[in-house]
Length: 84
Image (tube, rainbow, N blue to C red):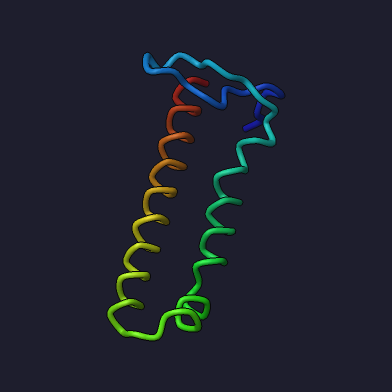
């Protein structure tokens, strides 16, 4: 499937596009997901956190953040392809 050059990148409350951007912006969510997971890797967590409960709490927060970003990415792609 070929994407148009201009795509909706932001929707209002009524799910009508309120902002448009270049088709390259569709790759922002996967890049953000990669960056967040890189900076919140287990190595970084283990080197900064000394207590076991702190490490577990940090890992749970990391998983929640990654899950939220993934859900947002899936929702954005779903809405975009639904509009095509």
